Length: 151
Image (tube, rainbow, N blue to C red; front, side):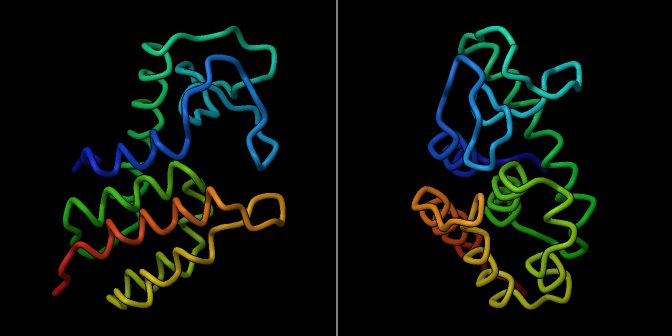
């Protein structure tokens, strides 16, 4: 399964496009649409060259494939494309390790869908602070997740 357009819109809207490396709210070198890795698998550094939108799109696709694979590997219940896409956006933002250890994932795998949906709110901090952008992103991800009817 692949992220749908609604999920992709969430990622692009909340990550935004930056042609030059910058430090994200978690103080990690980032470029393009929130990419922290280059196409060769190396980490983005503050010394990396400026990129154009085509390069940013390629990096985004690369990162999204990793997030898609993580969701497919870590979620043991069937998902609709909306639920899958919301989780891909979430994993792209917080990382597969954080998702793997999350109560969101464990509740989802126990088919506690409402409980899992309510876990999105716990992930609105960066650097120890609640950030409005993360509050809004989690709301969008939860809304996409909840468009699904679960069995």
